[in-house]
Length: 339
Ligand code: PHE
Image (cartoon, rainbow, N blue to C red; front, side, top):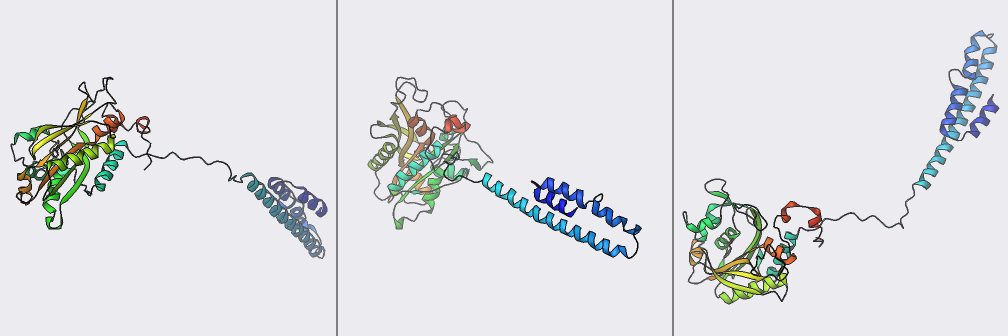
């Protein structure tokens, strides 16, 4: 029995087969158990002889089974390792990377441009005090110009900012002019009660900025803005300044740029004039300086506010502002600059 058992064990090819052999030899119905169970029928003096012999056979088989089990397991592991080996020379799978939103790309380009001209970048509050959004910008209560920007009010004194100018008032109030002029830009989301269509949105992006110092002129305004616009749109874009009105600047201008990308194609953004307004600006009103505690007899300068969405639409020939907010990957994927 022992010889045959050992042979079977050696010959077993996998763990299941080995387990069957174990059950067969050593299990409850196996021959060894049978012999041990039959002991009570034996004469007293025969019992130790038969018992110790049976135990020896059992131990030998158990040991052989354990040995074979370890060998089979090792073999299985070796096979598995060979099977699962990684071929490091195979080309990897590129994970799909996200891209910066086209609006963010324009903001970053503008920030870089203005940083390069010595401006600092600040970020204000989307939920603003009425005082900074209107009051300090020369728009007291009941001022008709408040209607120019239909407002989402949260309470009587708190609102969703309608432009980025509140940051200008805040910075003006804080700035220490004995340390030099104030040069800042501020990009962010603004909100207006507008019905959404291809060119209007109740929420869009602006960047405003100002340069206030002792000898800042309208020529600085023109030079700075022309430079910034050409950085985004290229040297050959035409730019025109038109007189306009804003309560916080005097004189005020609006800036249009030519839209050759859309010319002749009935581009929704440019209508039929071939020009689109992208920017409001002007020389900061003395009342705005006074409200922030700055002496208009000594300091002055310019401020401007530009529409980021319109910049993006013009730069890339996008004809519907709503594309920016739908988050359709097919749209976003076209602007593949990696962040
Ligand atoms: N705040 C103005 C707007 O949102 C833009 C502007 C800013 C005009 C600064 C003049 C000076 O329309």
